Length: 94
Image (cartoon, rainbow, N blue to C red; front, side):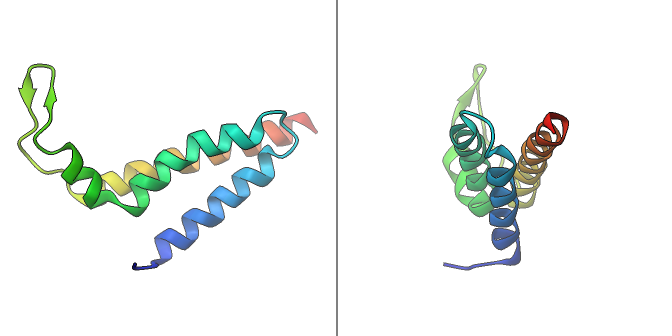
């Protein structure tokens, strides 16, 4: 398995989200359920594309591949957004 900088940094962002969510009652589950699917988008973008290619959506078949970079960038956007929201909630609570 290829351990890239993107994968390491994504784990650091998730660790920061766990730390920010520590005082929240269900914080562990919030971070786990929000970040695990996003980590899949970041770590395995080509496999996500292969899984969705050929599927049917709204009456038409998905017949073009999505570049892995686009899938990974979307994962990064949402991962950073989730972590930022948790940090803001933590800062607002203090």
